[in-house]
Length: 224
Image (cartoon, rainbow, N blue to C red; front, side, top):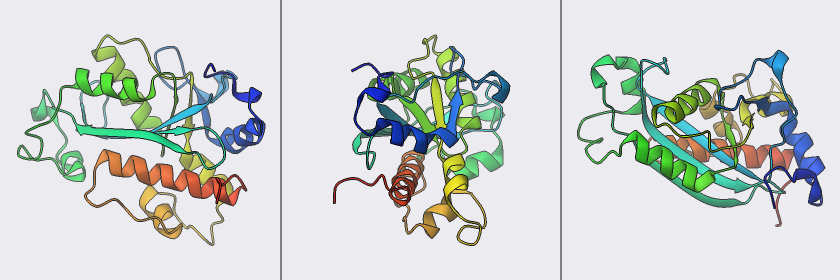
């Protein structure tokens, strides 16, 4: 089945309605389109829930230094299909933002076995090629993913829309239940624990788990 054949599966219209508040259209190179230039691309039949850690805020100046993704089928319960993550070797650590490195937990020792960006991006595309990217507050992650495609001379390998899970959470959760919408706080309020050491893959899993919990709230849980 082609990624765009969303409406041909039973119940997919309901799942699409659940995802709609978080849907953001992409240009052909993976960059987010302005809200007044949205097209009607479909989320398709697979989501790749990603998280990136970067050496700073600027996609042109800074680098991806940690990347993780969780592949899930689009359907009741969003069943997990696979995952992958790795630390990415920075080429210009001298330009890094000290605060960003601290958030990522960067050290030369921890990054001793890091992989080149070309390998990391190829592995992510191998895991989720054609899938719809999803994430938490996806603006920065999408900018760095698009820049990674440019730096590696790779045509955009993912879908033509992205899903911001934070926007879905804002639609479904009341302020008396969640008073701020950062990932850690929402995950804690929904009873989701972090997966040990802070890594991009751990945050991708936290985002995926929040998505599954939100789907349960919307009556789209999987089989018991």
